[in-house]
Amino acid sequence: MANVIAAIEALADAVIANKERLTELDAVIGDADHGINMARGFEAVRGKLAAANPADIGGALKMIGMTLISTVGGASGPLYGTAFMRAAAAVQGKTTIDAETAATMLNAVIGGVKDRGKAVRGEKTMLDALEPAYEAFVEQLNQGQSLLVCLEAATAAAEQGVEYTKTIIATKGRASYLGERSIGHQDAGATSSYLMLSVLTDFARQ
Ligand code: ADP
Ligand code: MG
Ligand code: MG
Image 1 (cartoon, helix red, strand yellow):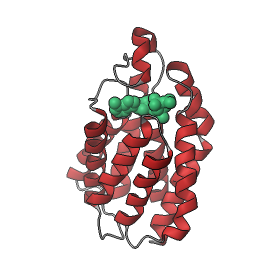
Image 2: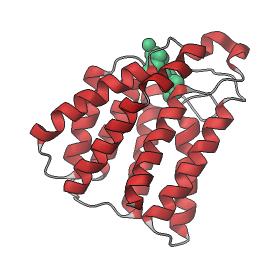
Image 3: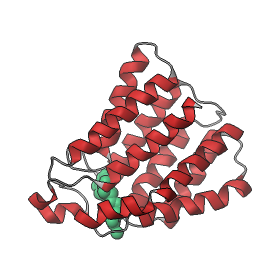
């Protein structure tokens, strides 16, 4: 579990370090708070981590999900909160993660975001990073590749997904108020999803 705690700390640190960048992206087509929201949530996660002393990965992810729901606010709080809760349910009792389990978790994350936010791919949301990431992950998994190779493919696909959000109109969330004027700007939530995947990939590489 020491590994898992270290991974969560790396995740929290990266979100906090990217607070300004994520907020700047949200300032262009939203209300300039995505980084602030996410950093607030992950600061709370970091604060709870030592005392929480989770027995398994499911417990750790459940703590994250509940903390994000109660501290983040905005659209992203319930969305990411639900995502982490669903991922937690997929790994109950486990203390290590293999590639197959990670695929199940990523799929659960996407299911949570969709159930909660009623968006589909192509609406300029975090799903435009997460869904291509999942597909790329599974493609590598089906070829028998390692967790790291699967994660690397997923992160590369998420990065392309972020680029793709620049080309489309937002039809969910605050950016949808801008209609066509949202074109040309990347989605903050897709960017935070990519960021989290890339941090976990870097962690797996160590
Ligand atoms: P708010 O929009 O309430 O200020 P944030 O700025 O923290 O919340 O989060 C905005 C991000 O949430 C968007 O960039 C987008 O990726 C994501 N988002 C918004 N609505 C939805 C939705 N219905 N489904 C999936 N993601 C969404
Ligand atoms: Mg916002
Ligand atoms: Mg807001």
